[in-house]
Amino acid sequence: MKFIKIALSLLLAVTLLAPGAAEAKDAKKIGKILDVTGSAEVKKGGEKKFKAVKNMAVTEGDVLLTGEEGRVELELDSDKLVYVGPDTKLIINELVKSAKAMEGKTSLSLQKGSVLIKVKKKLTQDSRFEIKTPTTVMGVMGTEFIVGYAQAQTYVGVLEGRVAVSRAVASTETNADITLLPGEQLLRAADGTGTVEALDWEDVPLFALEQHYADLKSAGETSSDVLVLLNRTIERRSEEEIRERQDGAATPASVIRFENEGGPGSPGYSGGGSGGGGQDPTPSSPQVVSVPKFEPDPDRRSDANIVLKLYGDRITRVMRADTGTDLVEGVDYIVTVGANSDQTVLVIQASYMQGVENGIESLGLKLFFASGFHLPMIELHARVPQPPELDMELIGNEPYSLVWDLSTLSIPFTTPIEFNTGGGAPDPVESAVTLYNVVGYDPDNPKPIDVSGLSIEGNRLIIQLNGNLELISEITFYIQEGLLRNPNTGDLQPLIEFSSEVKPHADREQVTYRKSQPGDLVWLVNGLGDAFGPDDDYDTVLTDPSGGERILMPLQDFNSANDGSQLRFTLRQAFLNTLDPGVYVLRIPFEYLDVLDQAEITITVEN
Image (tube, rainbow, N blue to C red):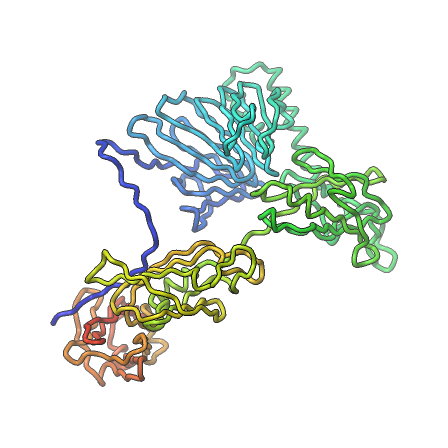
């Protein structure tokens, strides 16, 4: 018997960069984790998360994440060590062994937190080691240095060697490119401003200071006076950090205690016994009730309303933490009465928020009060965008469901959707969708298909076509950026390009049958608007785990019933119970408009 197999295919746009004719090629390298302290995770390929453990391999595309007390020691090569500090996100952008240089090329991206980097051997001319933050790029030629990123500021401190520092975007400013020498540091703002100054132990992240002390002590080449001074600094800063946490003050993770988290040791707690009928003591210092999120797009930002309880105190000064600049009352902020009589609202004006740089993830503010009390850090975080995107999980489970019939597409999204009626909205909306139908007999000449109408049903965009698609072909569609938006957040849909095969499809292509829960297995097959059914001239076949084939008998082993363009296919319980546990493949042949095709379904049998 003869079967024609047309496999499922979902074609995403993938660009393969073909190497040139050179004889040698760059190859990916593998790094590994040498040690882990506290909580830490690795997102392999930037997607699935795994707990970070000693000796775990890491490679290009991996993301390292540490908790508030987490640390990771990472070896990228025999002479390249990266110590990842607490509350840090580090991406391995590039990790390759160069065909021209033994050391190869390494590129890291620090999204937040801090790292200590040790490159023991001077790099050759063809080698490269760089680390980027969202605003700054550091290039290395053999050195030991620290990089930190928070509040859109990049900190670089050099212990040994030299570090070339440049902005992540083109700039004509005179300080766009700087070389830091040993014992120097730079705190650079998002706009590229910053001054080179002497390295200050108070500015170096505590974990890096501790590692540097351990390295100096182990090497035995540093005077005892320097080690004693460094150790005292570490002990003092450690005690201060512990005290700040116990007092509920700002920690390195920039966390403050909110009103409903009050208690002994928190700001504003006035103490007192357990008397007074069990009532909570009245706080004596200002406390935070709520802090809003702000829009990542500056043009969409509005007033940011921070709700406080002042308990008779008064705000005298508001300062941006990362730049140390004061906000101007009446221009950048105002203070108003809250919804409740005991609440005060600090309103950071929309004009100020819109002036805060694009791409910043958080904005820290320090508040000072007439009583002399101050809140060391209030952190506003950018809202995480939720644009409408294709529901790839649903598409993966139901790959042919995009083509409902030969003149209708049904495109699922991850969020609720509505048509964008704001700026940049296409007019008419049909112009935002471009489609091409590619047929097997003429693959080099895609046929354009006009759109006659668009509508929305739940999370799906319904596309009506002006004409019919050809059976056993491929449809590729493009949806212009900004056609749709998430009604809950206002985020606009990005550009979408996708392809799918056009053929009859079953509602399930993988199913599990458990003998402990007996019953028939039933599939519904969509015929794309035309009647069709199993072809009597070809056998329905089940392939067992060993590769053997078994011909199924109509009525005895299975039954099929045609209802217009829907086919109901039933595999009987009595037949299923004769199967041993394992994975089987069911092939059902169909004749559809004089075209022979077959549905292929995977069945896992369990006891």
